[in-house]
Image (cartoon, rainbow, N blue to C red; front, side):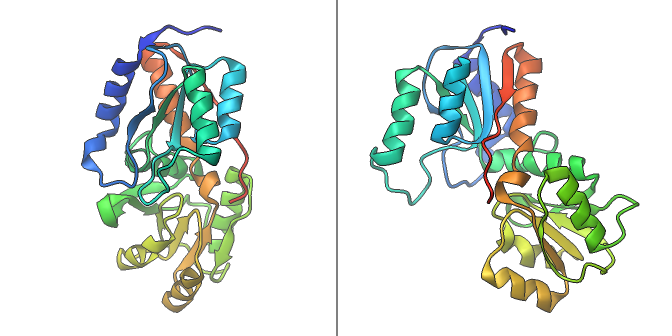
Length: 254
């Protein structure tokens, strides 16, 4: 299967507009991070621009990568050495473009990580909360009555059992969620009136706050909760421009 070709700069402009990237205060540059060939025909998406993802994309003949976790994070060592040199060398030597979108992809109302996770879990959105409105509020499906029911649903959908802090028999009321490493948004979720909060990761202090507030916390996996936005965005580009898109999942237990 071969797709149509689209100009790389047109693709970047469309992504910037679709994701409204200038609205966000982020920890990395959003957009084209590594420049490759001028034309994009075969796009591979993945969660993180790891060496394994780049090698898989190269084997398949892709000329562009679309990821949630790219490069050039604030506070990182800026030197092009070690694993960074290996990744960049492979991209540059083979003319592969790297597009990366962090917070804008978390937040998008249809294609974003939170929107897509909510859809898969059957959560009905009712509002937003927290810094830059990244957190989502909603209600669980009618057949999900307890925290234990919700944890079982997460395990079925994501393929991994979440770590649960709280009483499994507690009734599920208002649900808050924010994918990835958003455990620090638990306090904002509590202020927003949730009874259960889902995110990807968990920290030591998260446990105490969940227990003391009696708000159940489900740590569902950083990678596991952020697999879906980049897939939806890649499919959107395939539909919009006729290019070929394929998602490659590089397993990650975190």
